[in-house]
Length: 404
Image (cartoon, helix red, strand yellow):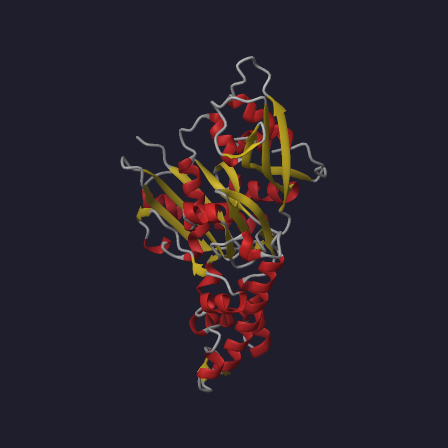
């Protein structure tokens, strides 16, 4: 029987567990999905271990019921303002007489790139090669098997706060699930919604969740830049709640049902009144105006996170918006108008089975985590490490660096 791969997206507003495997044709078949509201998390980080554990346990239970199988271990997404990243350069000599690059040389050069100052309260989560150079010949994707004297690598290194990782891992393990690997969430989302052509040309991905907006820039087929903004759907709902005098839960429902940020909606729409559950009424114009102003601010924050102010040159393929916050009516048009760049809404691709609920931008991370796990299945150890981080399987990393 084929090994079942599981993924758990631990978000601020929802917990989603997905189980799947590869069929004989190499396509991903979803076997079970468990979706529940999230409790005990704020801005992507655990703030109440007991509540978070209960939510994760319920999500896992529902996925198991749907699939008829058990979740033994899972790939888990990680996000939060505690995440930081830096690009680093590594170089090693090829010492053998035949000057043939072998897998061990890749491990050595990636280890060399990791020689950066990391505070004691932080550890490396990913060390992902952006590209290799052999004897100054650049843009080499797979140097193994080639000949040369000097091997260079440009590496994107992502670090995480030890305490935040420990809290998340504790919740997952308390739910009876071991961890295969921890994956930075925008990397996972990119697996689900980006095409190889977009990754190669240069693309900005912004996953707008409930508590954070996760950003990743891909260029020449690999990760180029990543960052986390602690502003997302929660702030939009909070502004509506305060501005219109509504309870938070009702403000959230109104945003999802009526929110529209299309650039011309305020000039084209007539003044109308919307009734709400508590017997009060609110102005449709006011609702849309508050939502639009907050989303314009978020789009500006995304650009401020770019490593290069000339984002058109950095990412010629434009911007892909995904996550639950990207479903606001008119957001694609607003981004095109205000940023003057090609924009689309990214939905998960390349899956079938029990998937009706997953064809939704809100589940980009969960599907991406599953794809990440399946695409690393059966690969040589050094190849898996190259993609998921220099330490490979996260279980050993947890024990070695996070004290778990």
